[in-house]
Image 1 (cartoon, helix red, strand yellow):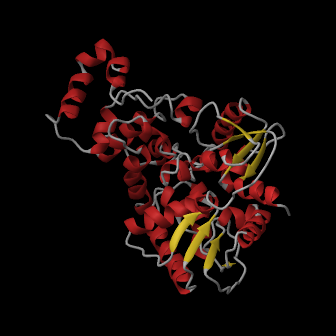
Image 2 (cartoon, helix red, strand yellow):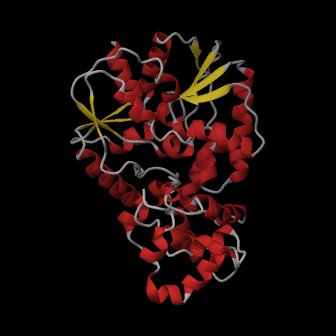
Image 3 (cartoon, one colour):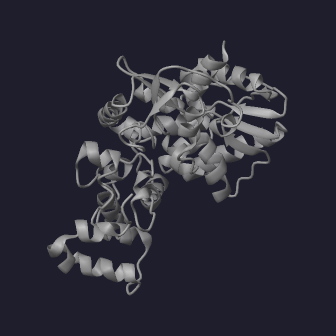
Length: 376
């Protein structure tokens, strides 16, 4: 990766350096003290080349710095807090790929989220979000389905997450089977959504309510370890819950984090590539984990994807609801990148599997792949 400051000479350019560039240099040198959103708004958009939304959508307002500028103008009262002005802020996948190229390691999603939160508090909410909030309020499930009643017991609690429960129940069965084969005393409970869809859409109060309910159920289960197949759930439990003072007693891991040392002696043939889920690779800082697991499988050829990190298009909760065409265009761009590597893709996220699987590209969750190799 190039140096984090190379973009100053490469992207500011002479004319910009004479104007906005001077102010930016003062910020960098510490001679001008401004908050993080202002720094991002002043930036010459050096991370747009890696932002999936910016690459596919191409609009200035939905580029990383473009969103920061809109958020800044709303915060300063120069733009009205209305749906038209909020729309660019929600054109964010919360993938945090921007942090890899930002010298300040800013997350544009984190910088602009306070504006979305203020909008929700004031009732400025897209119709497409209201049903999500209603489902979460009434059912504790983003799909609006009532979870089955379960009162399992054991040492290891497997949390499925909304997507697996509603869209991929067979993946839950394979995960439970795999974990039992690996020696875990595993059980499930009547889950409540981790709350991250509400968080991503700016409804922090609802997120906190769901977090409290979910933490209560998990803690009462008396599990010693929580394993989940959903990177967003793992991220919510490990990063967001502590941030809001919600305490979980058991340790929480994503299923890939316990597979690495246990899938020894497996053999396979053929070629695969991999798709790193954003919340696993960047949110939980497990950038090499999925690749390392695959590389340990004897006889398997693991080919690098054209881009190491690129969201499937369905992250962040908002784009797939407000602009499903854009979400699908981003997914199609990712499919093209992965097709360069191999026809079979291994990922570690149910949402990524659903987004990327197609007639031309077979996408398997690492749970399915490991289950196949260990035998039905």
